[in-house]
Length: 340
Image 1: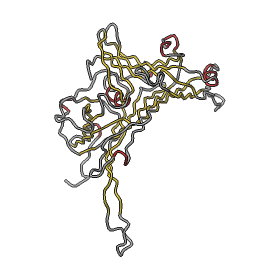
Image 2: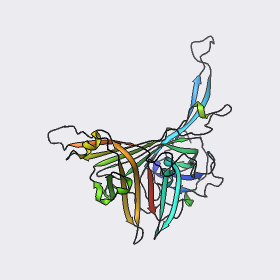
Image 3: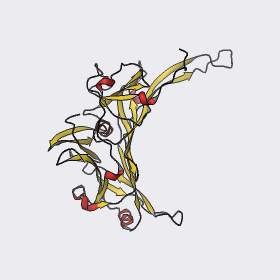
Image 4: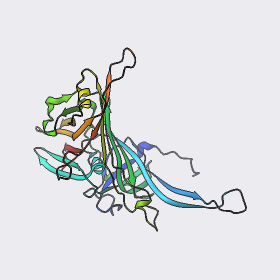
């Protein structure tokens, strides 16, 4: 067959992910421990930096080139899902998953940490088209964005950095199963704001038109984490974690403005609650930020018929630094899965 004669279609692809116990190590048996998710798109790709040698060689053109750093990065997008998003969100927060049994369901608390608890990193196998597989190892989420507006499903975007990749692997689709549970929509969402985390209840819920929650791990992937003798990363070090919350809200009072000018400390929580698991529990995702401050919520005036809107960005901080309970963000999922 001549190259380019056939056509492969994205809908025949799949993605499987695995927890790594050793950074950058793909599981010995790909069918064991595989999880899957329904991705909106998969942008993982491999680049090897090349350099043309600028040498005197009796001609105006270049005569030699070398290959240097291997960079494996890319973005994965999915809808926020009560079962399939757990490992990805846990990787983004870097603090591990604590699971407990509740009546008729399971609760998974995901803490923010330093990528030193399970999962320390993730491996992926991606079938691109119907026959060709790539394996990606040493994956960590550099940037996570969770966002939704009125009329939309809640979407997650994960900007990944990997240690290595290879074009390898056999079909494991028969070992994978897609969850029958639906992802979260804006209709299932609630936004709460109060002075402290302990005061966050349904009575302090506020109306918003949309939100974007961003977590930036500022992973180092330059020469500082490389070594002579290899063109791949040797480690993938996180630096300052930056959490930012932005909401869009109709302007009808000066309450938010007063919180801004008075530098009022508050706490916020986003809750998404889906279908029933048992009589006591529904599928649920809770994202809590116990300490934050508003930046300017001042609305601007566009067209005469426009509704006045405030786009409010929050600075999110750690509430109890240098203690075991201190956190800037925490995620909790309730679902029917016993363990991850």
